[in-house]
Image 1 (cartoon, helix red, strand yellow):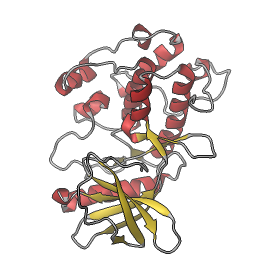
Image 2 (image 1 turned 45 degrees about the horizontal axis):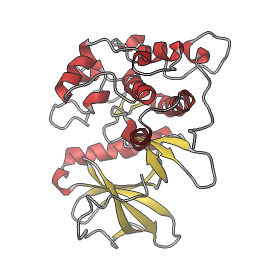
Image 3 (image 1 turned 180 degrees about the vertical axis):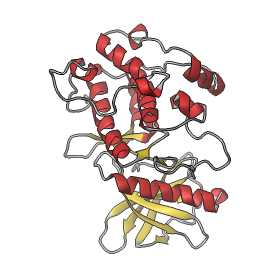
Length: 301
């Protein structure tokens, strides 16, 4: 989780500040989302810093508690450097569950895209390469993220090392072997409309290809500065199901035709037509990924 705070959403008095959660002392509030609030905390004995996500009080229920536990179990099962590490789970005296995660230094892709509008092709390929590696590990572990979007792709920027990508917020992740989806609290479809795949919108089977569709939306936005479908959330949902997406090169210049083809395959309405989740590393196989320009080592400064 991120190491910078948002003063606009921080209350005047937060009772958890300076309190003890397990072995950690809560230092500051650094973010919040629909499910909970995230704090920076320090281990009382060894000084290790961590991020602690605490569920909102108004959301506490056995089913939501299970949803947060699913996140912790799902992430712990993946074991990949491109997935945020979760190493603790517990419950506060007032009944609110929490998870303890590694504290990330850097910024989400949503912020980078907001600053730069569109990214250059080598940076996009680097982002896709790193994200696909993490997704492949998640899918092999039987986990589908289900809410992949720029806000959940974090660019870690350590002071003395090359940047890397980590996927965060598996709060509505689905274990593939779980047929009854405990993450659906009231029968509604969970996800972010602008990045939801057609099968997800229809309430159909969610699988690895669902994450690939969201990655296609992200790739389109990284390359062009805009998403392929515009309008209010309902209009976007209908477009995700029925409308053919435009070519990225129709929205921005200097986009190679191989990337046009790759993005449109990721955005195929039929999940079976989306390309494999692990890109080929061979330069001689002739697949779309091998013909695309090679990724750089990281985004340009």
